[in-house]
Length: 419
Image 1 (cartoon, rainbow, N blue to C red):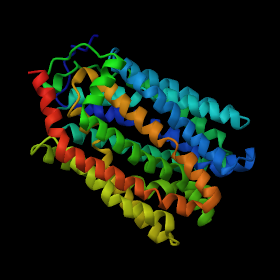
Image 2 (tube, rainbow, N blue to C red):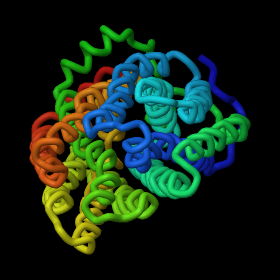
Image 3 (cartoon, rainbow, N blue to C red):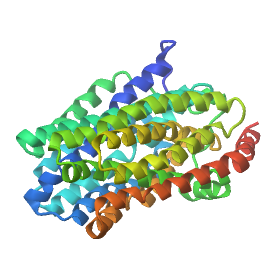
Image 4 (tube, one colour):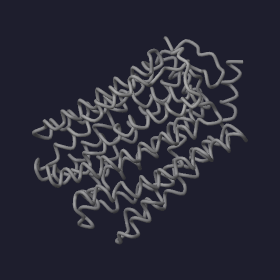
């Protein structure tokens, strides 16, 4: 493993976050684009709600299945290579989606894109953690998380707008092509840091999958965070997958306006909530290792009523209020997804830790679009969305338990193991 010895500007650690911000923007724009053209796919290819739900779930399942493997690979190779290579891979697959002529083609490319994107978060979050220590880590990751929200807005709106006037295929060519160009530009400016540098902790030998899984299972905080991520991701996937069609069907918005409304208010609110959540967590971390999990618990508990309102309201103004409220609360949680688990995971295993989070979170939550599609076929989409609030309450209970009972002891064990 080699890392750069190049003299870097004093603020380079924030430049890294800015560069990764753009990569994550296209990561989410590419994956969100398909949801805004669900009505076009439904009409052109005669797809049912269950088939549309399976398109969303196929990405999540493949993404999740590959994430742990991707994380262990990231712990062994240059993370820059994984980040830029992954960007090129998923961008090419995104472009190839435009070639689809039936449901089987769409399903294949959607699943393949999930595999292409699975390396990004394990690599990028591990890399950020080596530029940002405990005093700025949540803020750095919170700022990075805002790219997810703007990418979702961009993917949702522009895919709907392009689809409305030029058909659904062109948006995949545009997003994928821009991603390829971005990879060539940023490959010149992104440098690999030493592992463990920001924690003043020497990095050990990377763990094998079996060894890492054993360590994760023995760490109670990791188990709690994994289960909470399954619950929170379940709700997020439902909202992102089904909200554009929900607005198109229930409120009779155009494709472009449905795609924009489903993402704009929610994601802009999350853009505020995520930096706030990062700041809150860095402040509370000074009092104890449970500070980051406490902020996450606040986010999901407060967000549950807004999820109910999103599904049951009959008014667009109240729907916008609900989306803003849920989006802000979601941002509080999202800012600390990886920062919280890094409290109890040593540097050489952080890629694997992020990979495991994504594996469990996306496999456990990845069935959400299909499940809600099945429920919608029998009970209507409004009720199917609203009942997912129960899953959010479960996430909050888990996080509160971990913050109060487990994380301090687990974080102390990591420090003791490394002196």
